[in-house]
Image 1 (cartoon, rainbow, N blue to C red):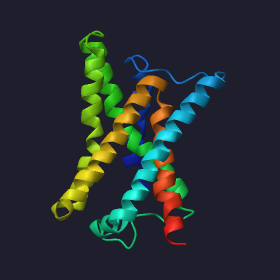
Image 2: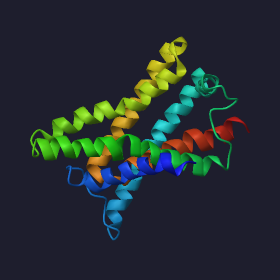
Image 3: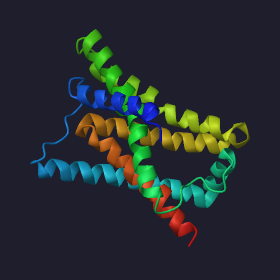
Length: 199
């Protein structure tokens, strides 16, 4: 793990979190706001679990995990348990830093607030939400290659939908919400499912 690589990414994510409320996104609930945190946790974890179960169903039908493993030249696409827990927790944080907390929130502040002074804020939000939600499925599609084009399209649509919900959660509930959705997704898809599938 190289601090010179991860440090700037985490710093960009932290900057986006700091700017997020100024950019028009919800602030995270106060520590004392139990109802706000319960709502945030329930909605975010339910959505993450839904997308995790959807990924598991796609694996049962289409053998997605094996195709992904072949694409990266590994025996398995997943890190073995129990190392999978810290690995994917950190991966979730890094993904949010490079998609939502970082470029999305910073660009929303720069364009929506600094440049447009709050005008067309919702339109700017959705344009940026769509563009940043494409980063992950496009990268996944490049990794898997043209020989699995139908699978790439289906998975890409699912990943894109999950990322859009993360953006909406960010707007409604604040910066912890998309991370919790992603943690729930990774827990189901990358931690629990490999244990069940190989049992």
